[in-house]
Length: 309
Image (cartoon, rainbow, N blue to C red):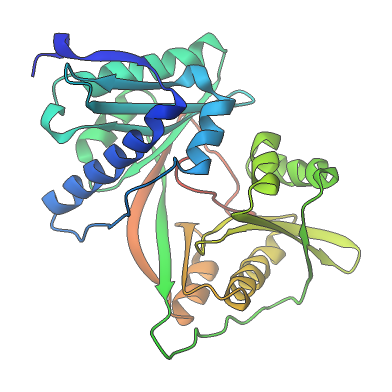
């Protein structure tokens, strides 16, 4: 198809269901091409709340492409938090790949960051997509570290293995926005930026629970757990607390009845990886974090979703 037949415009909320479908279908196409298992997903009746949130915070950083028949064939979404630009999504229909559409969408998304004076540039991409890795590296975002997608499913009639908690912490589920300053101060040290936008979202969305932890009177960190079993992010005030925070959050999810659990672990976090594998987690996929410079402290931080690290 000639790219002259493609129309690119800013994303609207009404596009998000089709955009998510494109993301899933394109990722599955790549997995099949690499001989990997694919991911099943139900047809959505409403767009994922995370995508709605991202579009609301950064409406100028997201674009869709349609063909002449109105089919959505490309999707890019980028976010700005302080001086960092992050590419959350860039997907093109397999029939149109390697024809320049992805580059057009990327250029538009990066223009959003340049217009707003961003100094750091980052994204996560599939480790088995060498073409994308080469493009992003050439654009000044070389690979920084591997990210391991770790998950486990509870077999019927079985129980999850318990995680050992090295340091016993007190835990509290919070819903009050008065905690946001404390949470963002932890983010600034561990993630190297403050992002109150995400905390307002996590605290207001019924699908997410924010857990705050203390060691006596000392703030040890926080974790966010969603209703589908994702534990992300986990942020510690000191390195000694990270493993315990994650263990507490995982066990809390088990107590909520989660039959499936997933998180994204940075490659350097060997103690975390060993703990999870002993508890029955396995590595489902390896992705790459790519950036213009180092972002986050792996001693303090287990990432949020790959769409916004």
